[in-house]
Amino acid sequence: MIRGLKQWWAFALAAMLMFAAGMSVAAAANGPLVLAASSLQESLTAAADSWAAQGHARPVLSFAASSALARQVEAGAPADLFISADEQWMEYLDTKGLLAPRTRVSVLANRLVLIAPAARPVSLAIRPGFPLARALGSGRLAMADPDAVPAGKYGKAALEKLGVWASISAKVARAENVRAALALVERGEAPLGIVYATDARASGKVRVVGVFPANSHSPITYPIARLKASANGEAEAFRRFLVSRQGKAIFARYGFVAK
Image 1 (tube, one colour):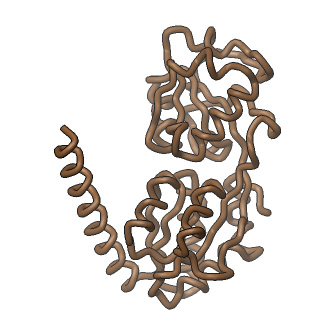
Image 2 (tube, helix red, strand yellow; image 1 turned 120 degrees about the vertical axis):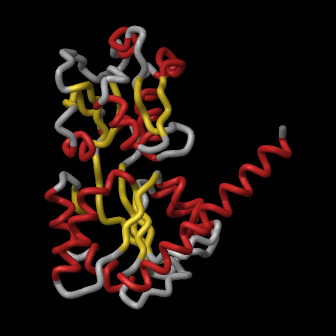
């Protein structure tokens, strides 16, 4: 069994590196390859469009959970920029010497919200001891994986601080990233979910039940850095654009708070 798992992981890693190599070729032809947290899909796409409209090669964007992307970088994926949904995964790469010096900066902030399908009538005040388990009934709470993915870790921390994690931990539907958690609620497969405020804003199929208190979890910040292995000549220029006033204004249009 263990040997089989090792073979499976070896195959998965090889496939991932082949994919990354293909993406690198595309990046060399079209612009820098950016690995970014799933919650940035609409905003970063708009930023890339704006950059391309100024006459630059359009960046190639790849979205996934910050944890998965950091592991790809660690495994040698030839990307140019990394934007994480938390400081921990960026710090992980920094301690391994994989970031270009003096390029790491935190540019955005977000909030954590409880959502429900748009047509589902539910009212919950998010406060210590609130009856989340009762509201779920026999259903499950959609969350990004609370053991690895930033949105899930923030969510678990908030529920622990509010004293309700123990009552719902067995009811968590663990998703691979925050957008997958959003999709579970959109499809009605989960009656409630925890996502970022910007994710809820991007969907017309869910509604916000409540906003988690800012002091119930660590600050939700998005650091960006150029990777030391970057080989694209426009990577640093695009990074500077994203952290500029113009770049931050684009993210603000999608609900992010510029830092």
